[in-house]
Length: 421
Picture 1: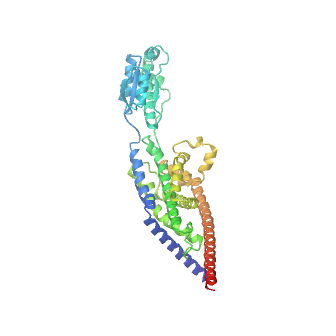
Picture 2: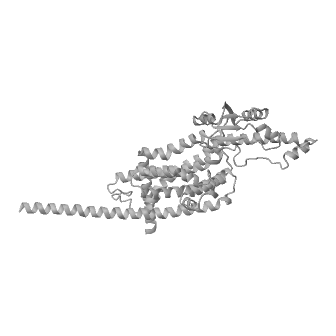
Picture 3: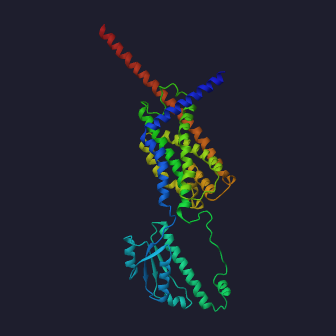
């Protein structure tokens, strides 16, 4: 019966701590912003910005030194494409660079004076492309447009000089190996479908760490011992109950946010959704737990509320690169790949992209799934140890403080007795 009594008492303590933590979160405006407002609003803003997937009508300047029929044809075909708009004509390259520096155009097409003579003289014609590399999407539009136009013009020239008699012979001579370009994982071939799923998973982790860190900072400010655990409350006597009560509070909030980020936002902005809801639930369970215990562990190392904000903002961009979504995973140095293993977002983002965007089976993401559970268990154990240390340290500090006050009271009493005699 004592075992059941202790279990019942432990459950009561967990529920009590959960209720107190929920009350603290509701009263803290900063935590409300990072726990509710940011996960709800920020993904909408970010997805809306990249909702078009690709950029259109990128302004380009042309330096036409050839002034030939072939160069004018190249310019017309580029201007007729949906991605590029020929906005300015410059006399030389220096004038074109001035337009780029003033951000009036995003790129330059330089057509040399020998362009037509080289092309029809069976020498290779050259068009130089200069791009503003500060924005990846504009660079892609300018470069790929020039590439497609030159390939199409080259195909027509091959037909003219090939001396073939039938259309079939012309097709084989100009394109002996044909192919179909089918983007299977990103139908629009854009930035949003490729990178935003990883961003959504990163938002889930970062808002959790921020909210837990702010809550811990508030608890330290309210506690005279500058600790996470209120020593005077008898319900806060067992480390396991404290960790479970707090994590249950965070889990109840972020299971809703995880459903919104993994299913609601992609459906709202028409991102690829190939995963079943059962697979998403299986993936989100260890990912949220790993993020919660990781955030609780980090909150024990942060002394003030502001520090966690600086830390999370500093590592957000490196964490996105280390997921392998915006930069190839094979090109990440081994040391940084090892560092990325410490963060749940690395494996959560990779698994979510493969599952939801690439149509992988749940068996295909088993390595990431197992690592997320290992992280959840590891950070849970570390959090228990850190909370136990803080509890012991706070109790030791409280006892020393009590002895100091008792000693002072006895000293004052002795002084009064001496004065009375």
